[in-house]
Length: 137
Image (cartoon, rainbow, N blue to C red; front, side, top):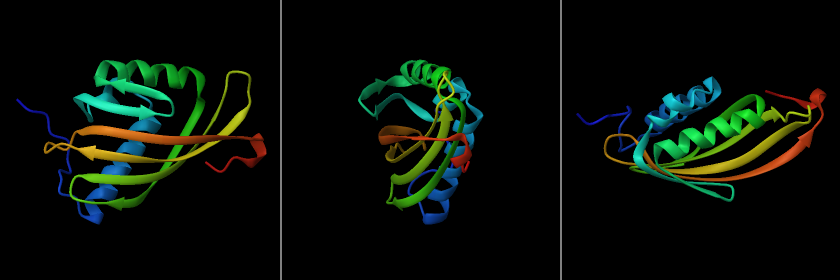
């Protein structure tokens, strides 16, 4: 049985936004095993300077991420889409174990297979130190 993750490509603006909201909700829930199911078994990622391949590496990456990025809160927005691709802009806030707050900005380019599973995710991210009083999310 082949896993499908709706909505499926080709994307309209409405279904692209649904896919983005589902990703935002999943990442804010911070469950790496569940998140990994939205990606193809052989999914390829570039996240900052890391290259991550497959669901097991995705799970390990996300567990490590949220061990260091505490009180994580993410907001994604639609930038563009085509038949099987979606581009998003995002920002998220988090604090490190020492208590320093950050706001991270970036964009992601996503490519999906016919079953709606993300097969490629390329993320460019910049971090800005902020005071707790500057938090927006």
